[in-house]
Image (cartoon, rainbow over all chains, first blue to last red; front, side, top):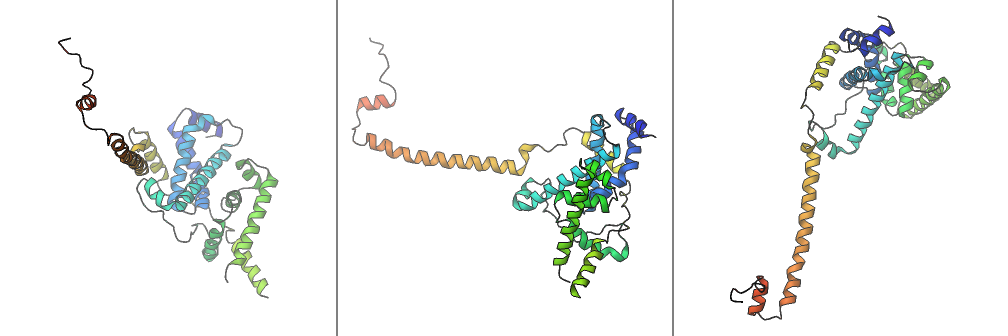
Length: 187
Length: 109
C-alpha cells in the first residue's frame, strides 16, 4: 500500500488500512515512547493512545509533512504530557492518591534497561538513561530521537517544527549537560 | 591522569547507546489496541466526576465551613436579643406581638 492509498483507507475508516498503519509504525512509536518514558507498560499505553488519536484525527492531517513525521510528533507530545502529569503527581503525593483512578501510590521503578542495548553496555546505558531523565524536555526529546530512534537532524527538525541548526544546538547542549552530570558522579 | 580516566569513562557512557537495536512493540499489540478502542466506545465507562474522592472531600469541607460560620453567627444573636428584651416586663401586648395576634380583627367590630 502506498502512503496515498493508506491515507485514503484511513480517512474512509477502513480496518485493513488501520491495521497496516499500526504494523508499519508500532515499533517506531513504541521505541520512541520507551526512550522518553523509560517504562515498558507506560510506553505501551502511550503507543496505544497515539494510534487511537491517529485514527480519530486522520481527517486533520493535511499532508504538510510526511505521515511518519506527524505520527512521531503525536508520540512525542503524548509522552511528554504523560511525563509532566507524573511529575505533578509526585509533587502533590497526598492529593494524587485522591485523584488516582485506583488510588495506587505513584510507583518509582528501578534502573531502566532498554532491551536493544548491547549486553556489554547495559550498565553504562542504564546510568546514561538516568542522566537523560534529568535533561530539559527539548534536549531530552532531541537526544532520544537521535540516539534511540536514530533519526536524522532533518527528520527531528520536522518533528519538533524546528530547523536543523536548532536541532544541532539542542544535541550539543544535551551532550554538554550529560558530560557534566556524568563527571559529577562518584567513580 | 585521573581526569583522563574520568573523561574516558564519561565518553564511554555517553556512547553506550551506539548500535542500539530498536525495541519491538509488545506481542499482540494490535489486538490489545483494538480491544481498548472497543472498550472506549462503550457508553457509561467514564468515571462520574461527582464521585471522585477529591470532589466529595472539597464539597464536604465547604459544607463544614459554612456550618461552622453559621453556628458562630447564630451564637452571637441570642445575647443581643436578650439584652434588648431584658428590661421589658412581659405584658399581654408583648405576648400578642410575639405571636402576631395584635392585628386580628374582632368579629364583634
